[in-house]
Every structure is written in structure tokens, then in C-alpha cells.
Length: 139
DNA sequence: GCCAACGTTGGC
DNA sequence: GCCAACGTTGGC
Image 1: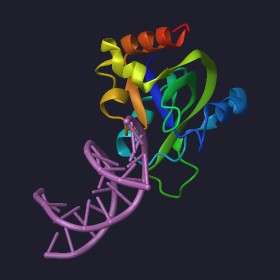
Image 2 (image 1 turned 135 degrees about the vertical axis):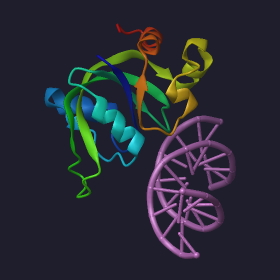
Image 3 (image 1 turned 90 degrees about the horizontal axis):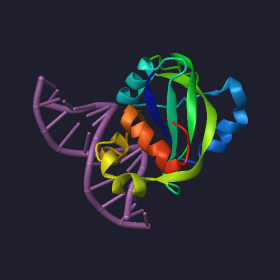
């Protein structure tokens, strides 16, 4: 069981959109970055991830679950790109902002803090527990 | 709206 | 295979 972080601009695809999709989930398509794609290839069904809103929110707003492993991205003909499917698990009681992550010394090495541009990232178990604690949510 | 950081592309 | 040019992302 691994932990991840999925980043999205809320104007393009938001947490609410994911919740609305229900248990069958939604393709996490549109990723055009090799590092991000490679992380998706490592994902297994049942892995959990944070859902992060970039830009206006800049906060982790909920937890998602991987419900299908990597498969070709249906939004392109280019067979280099793959994606997983994710579904919403539960929202945070209170969103965990980027600023909160930056201020907590336990999260100093978090990819979100160090490389804000990577759209799909691994999260360690320790980081997972800290962010859940800050968000008022069970890990 | 600006700009820094980063990834990708393409000419050589 | 290198590197300059370019495009995109995302925080501020």
C-alpha cells in the first residue's frame, strides 16, 4: 500500500467533480509528464492519495483511492501516455494549505513543498499521517 | 499579471 | 549528445 498526491487546478477538475463521479471513479487523464506517468504506473488498486487544489486554493482537500491501475490515456492518441482511475474516499474536515505544509518541519521534505510543479507525486507514510492530522481526518 | 523553475523540443 | 529556445505550471 502506497500513498500519493494528485494535483489539479480546481477550475479544470475539482474535488467536487471527483465526488460527483461516485464509486466508479474517473480517469486521471491529461498528464503529459514522464515522471508523473511513471508514478502512476507504480500505483496499485487500493492505494490512497491526497487530492490537491493548485492555484486559488493551494490546499489538500480530500482523500482519493486508486480504483484502476495504469491504462492508456483516452484523451490522446499518443500511446506514451497512461493514467489510473481514482475515486473520492472522504473530504478533509479542514483543508491543509500549502503554507501549513511549508510551516510544519515534519513536511520539509515533502515533494509538494520541494517541487511544486510535479502533478503526481509520492507521499511517505509519515507525511501521510501528518497531513491527515492537520486536516482533522483519520489516516 | 508576473516571473522563476522546470520539462521538452529541435537544430547542430 | 549537447544546449539554446520555447512553452507550461504554479506560487506569489
